[in-house]
Amino acid sequence: MKNLRQNKHRSNRSNAYSKSKCSNWMAFDPFGGELAQIRRDHEPTTVLELADDVKINIYVRPLHEDFIRPYDVADVEKTLRGVPIKFLKGIHRIILLGGTKKQNQTAWSKMFRYGAYCERGWIALTAYPKKMMTMYYDGPIRPHRQQEYQKTFTKTCQEGDDWIVKFDKESLKQFYLQDTLIHEIGHHVDWCRRKHWRDVTEEFAEWFAQEYGFARK
Image (cartoon, rainbow, N blue to C red; front, side, top):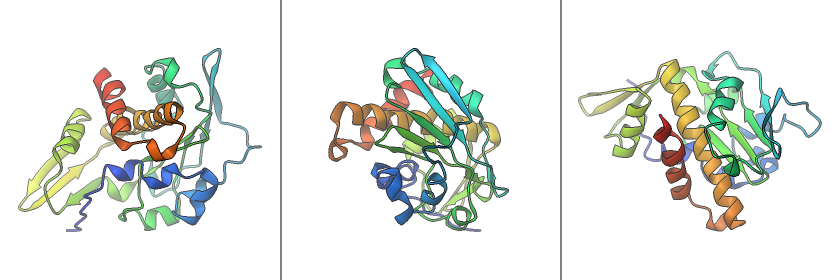
């Protein structure tokens, strides 16, 4: 059995790297290279017109064979339409990454995260490694994480001292849309009101995800 102790599993959804400008990501982690493929002159896959003053470009990267992306542009749009429009102002791009060989090789490390927000108004959602559809914790899962798994109907069980988490496509889809995406929007809202990364907190994004994500289910 492969043990994976993820004491900072939540922070890996949106960690310190998400506070860097997108152009700086390549020096830090395996996601930067893929994100850098989205150039200013690239045409978006689609443009979501959510209001007269809120238009968000959606970019969809090719999906790598070792990854899964259980949601599509329509799912993202449906989720965004459930968020008060005032919170979406200033978000320019949402990028659905497709995964790379390098990301797959480092999937079990602390470098993995579900998504990130950049201060220029970009949100990135990562593709999910197929080999992580089943994850092993060599200790108890934190209560707040167990609650989130329950809300997405993700299966958890205990075998001896190990805890096992099993995603399926639907539970993973809900986790990305109702938790990760809303969490990153929370970072955007927090940054817009503070205008300084030093004051932006994970706690606010956590609260925002609970208030405007799972709470609507």
